[in-house]
Image (cartoon, rainbow, N blue to C red; front, top):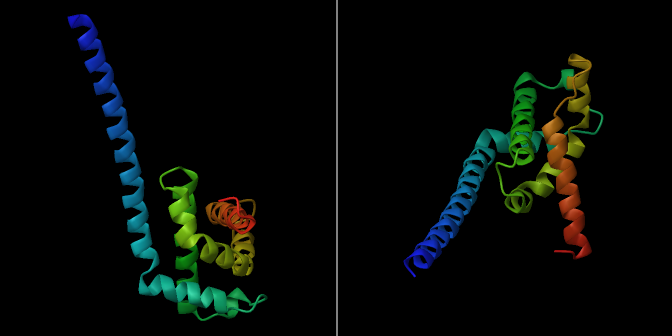
Length: 150
């Protein structure tokens, strides 16, 4: 009888430990997302996104004033970081796509001139691969919502 009770208690302790681990991991992912979100809603990031989205489709990157180019570059770098964290599983996908999916996809579409420019600067090295990943997953997520699958 004592052996059965200790086995049952051990199983309960194991299940509880697994639950605590999973909950801690989920909380960690949410905290990381909140920190990234704080950076993304900052004034300079917002300015960079606005500048990026307001550019004509065939803008010459070299013709932009240096501060505008820097703001756009920082905004794209933040999307790159968000995409990397998402790709590595550090974030909860639904949280990311609910808040940043549509803005990321729209930014990716407008950023193509800047992506090509970066690829010309570093031939053979794909530019913004994590940003690309983020945008592709965001599009898929958006298509899923529109089809009513969620």
